[in-house]
Image (cartoon, rainbow over all chains, first blue to last red; front, side, top):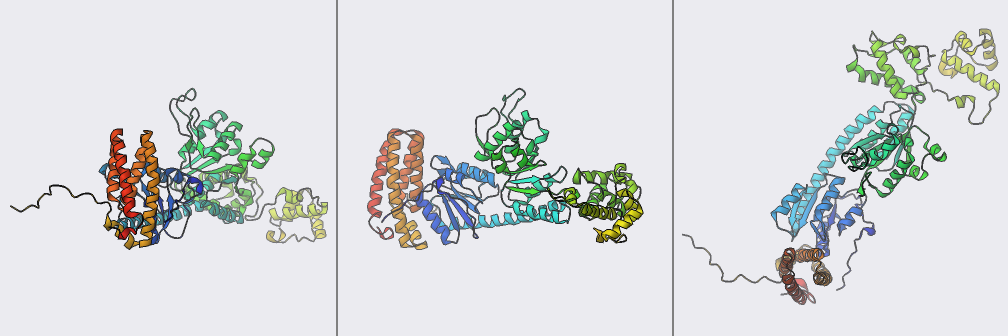
Length: 486
Length: 129
């Protein structure tokens, strides 16, 4: 009878492959026990994946199995280490501990360490199958609760991404697309567009939702302190380091780390960050131990990172690590159709802090807001709504209640797309005939004045008669409603 | 006063195999599987005993302990009772750091394995005496 011994070294690219059925991971260094247990489990309909050492488990990637059976006496390693490693990835993963020991202390220690059940060798087939079945049921229950919590959590977070404009619908779709994977997401957008909110939505909607969400604003930390903040430091590493401190990477273990304003990171910190991402370990400042970290990285920046790479200010190798899936957050001026919804959202949010109930905003006030360029984006809008609520004496915010610097803005019909100045003059190096530019200028003037030839002429710096003449030449109707003129 | 069963003068000797366990494996899966498992066990234990002998000769306590422990578990799974007991004793001696007793028990373990092989090796495990 020939016997072929399986080699289960980590290099065999074992992983916790997902399947439709319940997956049982078998961590056992003895091949006879492994073969017997596997045959029993497969006979009962389970998908079994085998690991013959603690190292092979640590090297495994991919989703976790439904249940794990661990032999506590794994050669020279301890099954407890494997158990702790797996529970770091998911504290709710049911682990069934199997051992040749009969000591009560071992059983108690295993249960205290979070084992779901404890079996002694020789393992009885019926007892094993009963334990695995119950552990799978428990796993399914935990997963259903998580899915429900996640659905509720997602609902709340996605609700905060207020807006129904095409840009916001596209953003929501992109966020949902990256939630379930660990793909490196880079959030690109101006200040105040909600980058941290989107990062939180990605974290809460993904498999790491039980883990921590840690955000660090690289622009707010002096270059000299960035390394210590990100990677931690050992006691005595530098003057003032009176105790060991965990960095953001270690605090975000099992969760998500948002590197906000990553474009502001110093060259030295970029080098350490690159090594950390490559090795998946951190070394605290002043320390010499490599500490494994399992963290999802989301970065954000208002800068053109590609441009920073080209200018030599950002490492290209780091850029490719961080920007696998870029998501662009729209500026408020590019989704003015969301203004009424955003204002309503902030009014609702501010209700408890308002001196009296403010139910809405007049159309005129909204049009004034639509005429602003919103360099501070949604954050600026929230401040404006807050200030307006405090000034407002009635149930509705009027133009006069808006901050003084905004009141003088030329109103714009809410929901109309704001033309890019580049588009107005033509794209790129395109040169438009003066007649076309004149045509566009008149159309715009009529649009913002809602068809008033007198006010449009004033804005254009020409006489009313001249404008009428031009309109006739260009075959534009002065009385056309704004929607048709645009 | 109730009659208590008489205490035997000597305990029954430990059997080589747990026939109930072997029969259960054959019944739950198949005779062919049991034969395959026995062959796997014999080949694997053969290698492990060689390594264990080296470890004990080199007085490598950590590795010797791990090997003895694994051998004990393998024997328990298949129902090779006496071999399991001897491997357990060797583990105890190693834990105590008693190398002289470990040397003696290793010889016993090797002898026991030769016996197990003679019982299980060439014939059908479930049908063996």
